[in-house]
Image (cartoon, rainbow, N blue to C red; front, side, top):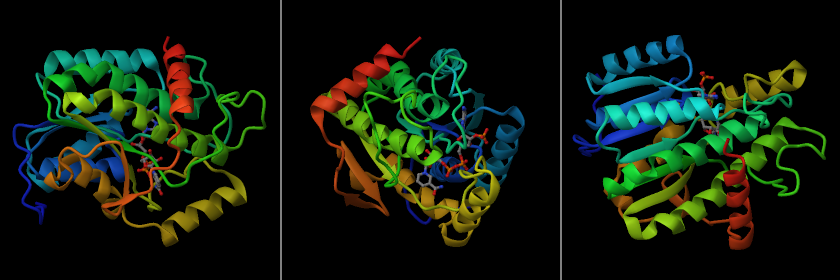
Length: 284
Ligand SMILES: NC(=O)c1ccc[n+]([C@@H]2O[C@H](COP(=O)([O-])OP(=O)(O)OC[C@H]3O[C@@H](n4cnc5c(N)ncnc54)[C@H](OP(=O)(O)O)[C@@H]3O)[C@@H](O)[C@H]2O)c1
């Protein structure tokens, strides 16, 4: 059984972690469970989700871990996850938007949206929208968005890579820039409701994030991640801390790595609003 070194007591608090079956999400779910929280692990694969659930139950001794299935690239699946969650659980105090992909090629989601944008951006956006009122009702509450310093290349005139050549890194970096810009909008929107919104940079972390990369490039990236990446536990530490620690009570709209605040770049209110309106227009 893993006993946390920090004396944080989250009993009575309910948390959702997306992509909780591996990497950073699993580390965050483990930490929250070890603090006594009720943790809903939002995962797309029944078998991978079940394996992670059993592992975390064994490690933490918690009987407050739950698995709920959702394909975060599909808006209908996100909606049914949210409906299900809201009917089954009375409270929500922490939402950790973590699930993400680093793709090799351009693919479309079931909703016809470029897959990186659908998974890394629209899922954060729509899931938060659907759960926002419950977070308000349970305030003080927290949203933690897992993003990255590996961010940039956002083109408001070509978010779907229809005009430029697709690149996995460009799509990933664009999505991680959008995560930050949309977090600043959300933080502003919720600041008087007792719901904080913070962004965590975990990496580089030795997880499976590069598994879709192919050929020599793919091999090189995977070797580099494994050789130079931090452990998932170390990588998840800042997101876990933002989700749970009294150190950050009331702090919102900030960007963090290794529990330290970084400069809030990509802060550009007019473009943020444009981006937010674009996401609203992509809701099916
Ligand atoms: N690793 C790094 O160096 C690093 C650095 C900076 C930021 N990050 C960020 O950290 C977050 C977690 O990544 P990770 O490194 O922990 O990678 P990971 O081990 O590949 O975990 C990604 C998680 O997201 C889930 N996921 C992906 N697409 C999904 C979908 N459509 N529906 C539901 N779940 C889905 C995966 O589920 P499956 O197992 O079913 O695929 C997996 O549980 C990402 O947002 C990433 O951008 C990572």
